[in-house]
Image 1 (cartoon, one colour):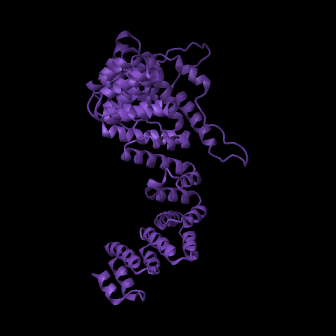
Image 2: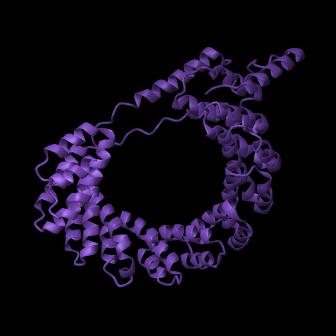
Image 3: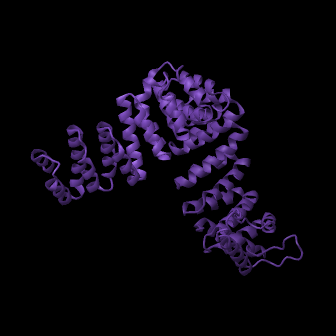
Length: 464
């Protein structure tokens, strides 16, 4: 972990004070155990080397059938030892670590030392950790220190964090400070949000407050969210919906639909749909029919089906055959088919070709062909070649060639040339050759000139 000028100044001032008082700042004080040897930089380095080497021994794969060994943690005796260090000893050990190679063991040691520092001097620990984060250190250190400071002076901690130059350090600290603050006094924390800089600082603090506010008093949290506007209102609503929808999704939906903001209603309903359908697909999809606004109802169903078809594509496909799904089937069938094909393209293709409505069938076949072609082009090509119906094969070929054109335009053009429908043939080749000419005009021109499947007139059009 990189060290900062702040740490150097802290150490220098401590050294001077210690020198004047006759006690050097970095002198190691005896620990409670009478048998313990005084700590030295060499001893400390040996301890870290031991931790690192023990960690490396875990790298070998375990024997077949045996569970991998758990990730090593700091030895309990070392954890207890650090918990009893004085502030001067914490500073000394952190300085001894300066320049060491970053490993899981040294990161864990940093965390233990900063945690101890936070108990003794949360302000100093926060300043040290913030400087470290600004230079690439682990934000977890700052969160530990900031939480400790917020327990005793949350307003002071928030005021300090808001002035940090590093956006990452600022937002990491503020998120933890407002989480700690709002756990005990959400109203006071909420009032302090708008003293922060506009942007991510306010939205991160709002999310932290809303999360704890909703746990303690959902009704008050909703009233508070309604008093907000813009990004802060959306941030608060996300947390409220996430928490409340687990116990009362219908009540959450009713609250969302009462909100004046179109953006809040849209975003919150989409979030509710995903949360609800994960636990109760039938209940979520049945609720969608009670949403009177057709645009909001469609948006809710789209979000629900996106999550549903990722969880259980067969059940999602079956729902598309219901009366409730009929008005939305055209916009849903492609997504359901694509996500199903990612898991089981054979089953998805069989379902797609069985759809009786020609428009829906073509959308499903196109989605399956695209997904399958992306994941396994050889198998997809075999499936397309096996299709007996010319119209179905043309739809699958057009989608497959469009997918192939992203990585292999020559093969894509060859496949597109097999399309029997003249309109589809011309449309596919115009797109493929047009994009191909931008990256390799000579190869595209050679293909067009040498093709026997194209008329002279169409060749001239492609070569323009």
